[in-house]
Amino acid sequence: MAAPMLRGCCLGRCWALACIDSGSRHGRGAASGFTSSGKRGQSFVAQQPLLTAQKSSKGEHKWAAVVGLEIHAQIASNSKLFSGSQVHFAAPPNSLVSFFDASLPGTLPVLNRRCVEAAVMTGLALNCHINKKSLFDRKHYFYADLPAGYQITQQRLPIAVNGSLAYSVCVGKKWRQVITKTVRIKQIQLEQDSGKSLHDELRSQTLIDLNRAGVGLLEVVLEPDMSCGEEAATAVRELQLILQALGTSQANMAEGQLRVDANISVHHPGEPLGVRTEVKNLNSARFLARAIDYEIQRQINELENGCEILNETRSFDYKLGCTVPMRDKEGKQDYRWLFLLFMPEPNLPPLLLYDTASLPAGADPQQVINIDRIREQLPELPSETREKLIRQYGILPEHSFALLNEVGLLEFFQNVIKETRAEPKKVTSWVLNIFLGFLKQRNLAVNESPVTPSVLAELLNLLDRKVISSAAAKQVFEELWRSKGKTPSQIVSERKLERMQDEEALERVCHAVMEGHPQVVMDMKRGNPRAINKLIGLVRKVTHNRADPTVIKEILEKQLSS
Image (cartoon, rainbow, N blue to C red; front, side):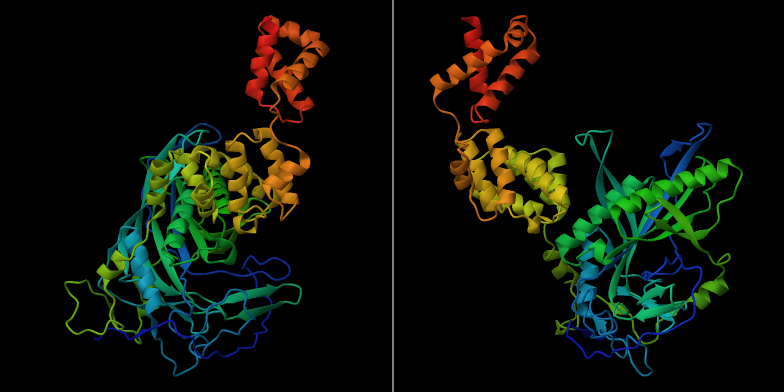
């Protein structure tokens, strides 16, 4: 059978679909008002035993936790996986729906080349084997936001298999104790997203938005090599950074572009694996960690109290901080049930990929995909970037993680480095401790900061030339947030924050402070180290932080010995 025709990311005609008014829905875990339902369907991650064991709350037995993840990443593409409909977040409901998306009779899928290339690039970055032949399947399940009654996916022979994802976690309370772990990747498959159901419990109706129906997804199935929420959240964050570096997905969890299903079970080491539960549609790394840790402890408590774990789907209530049941899983899967659930997609022939050695002579470059060519286009991955930062700037490993973990922070840091004479370690300290701290306090993104890299670089130059003290620099930085448009030099001049250069005047201030605090001076003479620090603080207060603490200490010690 011939390979399927590949379609570029062109824009196609759209067809608006009216909302569907239905009766009241139950068992979907919907809250009052409008809520969005995410992906549905059964999980097929095989469980493997873990080495990490943890004690129960009663301390009587050890438990081993088994955590596997299914991650759905929305592919960064202008159009959907099998239709020409545009992809835009927060577009008006049902404004981006083609005839194929609505599953009208006579419409056929046309595979999006961009989505295939994104899957291959992601697979290569995750050390996967790329299958030169992969197949599409129909996965049947009914719900209103899936118009066809099935999802086109790759169950039997996915595009990429047998990969690995390395991630780093901290041991103990100090980030300097960093260890690298690896989770195996079972497969990466292309599939369609479903639409979105908006449940209005007040009016007892469900509204359907099909804008998301047919959007291309990468499903990344991680083997259960993790044992706690922290490991899972860190692995997902590393995958998110990789996808963003590749450009294959924006992976914005707040916009639903990266959603995670967690499969969790517990058992005693050496005994058969426990019954697993699946926690669906987690769209925050923090909530993912909390949901997994809660579910592990919940299962331990249930088993120790003589109860059974149900094979069920659960959701995480972030307000209550717990998982709640959504629905029971289907009965025990048998071959007849699997046959009914999955069948080959008759409208899509096998997807054939090539490498340089197997590329047919005279092949149309627009109709074939060369794996080796995509491999050559792989950008620098986050792990390589971190190593480069450590080697180039001499920063600590934990600082390299922090620079990459905040969107836009690495670029900000590098732009400051280009424009300042300050040492990279000082720049790192200011960016991570002071600049990032201000952003967090005000809940701002890096690109929303009123302080630009050029402005921070100018401030650090003033500090490096000893024009101002460290304390004065922090005052200037605070003023920069309040006085947009002013430069650091202007603020220093207006507020008279220049470093005190008159040493004789500083000596007089130190002498006056010592005379005014005889008890502190006596403590200093007795060798109390806190006493001199107190005197330094008093002098800095009198000089409005314009005096250098090192110079103040030298003068105080000189006057004390004279």
